[in-house]
Image (cartoon, rainbow, N blue to C red; front, side, top):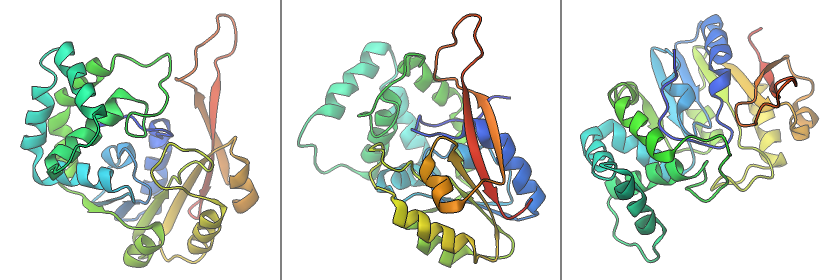
Amino acid sequence: MPHLKLIKYPGSKSSLIPTISKIFIDSQATTFIDVFGGSGIVSLNIDSPKTIYNDINKDLYNLFKVIKYYPDLLLDQMRKWTVDKNKFHEFEEIFNSKGVINLTNLDKAFRTFYGFSIGFGGMGSTYRTNNEKSTYTQTLKVISNYNSIRAKISQWTIENLDFKDLFVKYDDPKAFFYCDPPYSGKDWYQDSFDTKNLEELKSILSNIKGKYLLSFNKSDPVAEETFGPPKFVVEFEDQNRKKIPNETAPLRRFSIYTNIL
């Protein structure tokens, strides 16, 4: 069954959702907390009695808050700018224009949605892969799934906290924290995440009352330097790289750390 998806995002963990879901069920926790929520794709596709989405990016926070409280208004904006391809790409000039002021939260939410739609992530400014489908077609697909997306988000608690403050606020024996930290050394995100932050995260996870699952790209050397060998590694075909005929499909590998298994 296809995953619900609102926006594209660098480092999205859609392929890890089955693994995350299984470990969350095994944990017997009742609250799923997406510490570095990003695109929201994990929270959108995990069944939990209670979901807390968090991201320090204020634009993402605003986008999800608008969907929760003013879903029809944002849908109207989406439909307005997707009546045809020309109209959709017409907004790109507006999006890239300088000196835009006095935007409402609704305006900001649509700009955030649009920015992630026309680029791989990073508000439309970062790279796109050769295998990506038409951004216009992808946006129409989001609109077709919007009722399901808004239904999930309507049940969320949405936070805009530093990860350290989030743990202080929500740590509990029945809490499950999913941690997918921003990639170190990348400029895809508004807020950087460095080795010091990883050390702080390690200290927090070593002492929480709740359960956690922490994931990293296996190729990230900083992860093992900080957290040591992973509990286990999962691998998937890399959908962002072209397959070469008669050769083994390229793989993506993820290191998994958890206090459950």
